[in-house]
Length: 477
Image (tube, one colour):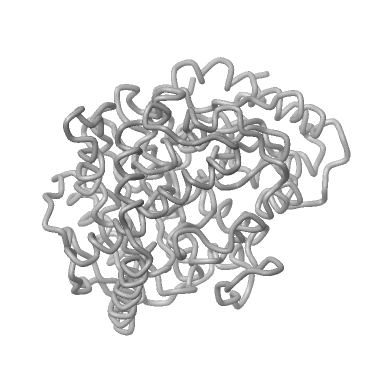
């Protein structure tokens, strides 16, 4: 078992190689992951739907010849559906809803050889940058259990950071992969819009704000997984530009001298914590030491316009999701079946007319063009991932007389990530800095539309210069 205790902290690529060489079996990996979930999850609350019997059956059967054959994996309880397993979206309204089939992404994850052990916690409907749903309770950060693991993919992030599995599914509509990656000290890539499929249930979600991928311990795992899952599905309304070569080949490839712009200020004017500023300046210096040209610059955007337009799409999506859920379960939604902040967003979305929605979308598309022009002069834009270190649990609780407080407080926490969902550009949070309290502080890199390749090349350089994968949070032993 000592050997397995070491193996569980290897990345997915290394674990799969051990399975291929028959140095460990898929069943042994699954058993080791289950043992860790059973032992550590009571302190984290990351996994909310175990699937141990199915996982054992898969591990004992004929595994596909995929790049991650035999590797344990967790699926976020949102968007990606798994046939015969409940999908709640973190909401009591959907507590007993069971998906009728696998989404295309799940088909590809299984084809890659991943063994799904269960589903991870998420905030109700994925609306907040913390994972504290009323239905399941809060997911706790393995670096400090009094603090948030981020959201909305916080359950997945906590599970990977604590070594329950080497990587786990996430999705990102305003930063929901990158936020928990920053909070939990992981690598988190948001791919280019439509890089991964959303079918057959969706063509796109919220007019392209939402994308799917994963939280990983290493850069190479993220690249290899994206190779396994990306590409258009039949009937997709649009898809991302095909890469010139597999993403995994970019890991370790020469990047050349990149022109990197950086900023430590938020366009919204919200204050940025000193630790987050230190992380960016430290990373900018590291990039300069690696031979890149680093200058202080940022695109000029109308943040008030962005906020209004984004909230129109965000609230309309909330209303659409609840109405769709009501249709699926055959009952009418009511305020007492949802958290107050969710219901307030639902009511806001119901008030948004179709013309208002389309005007907001047009404005966001215009802003995306303005930001794209900035990338005519720069290869990468560096910012803080978050404006604060991981905040205490309960920070986003709304008082009874102001149910939308959670959304306004969230805007102060995540002023940097949503712009990439608006533009569709790839972006990544990289764990290069820990503060004096031992909390991870991610730094955020944005690439040109369709250019994950540059981000993977740069990330691999940073990982080699300042490795992070061997760091262990207190809740991991």
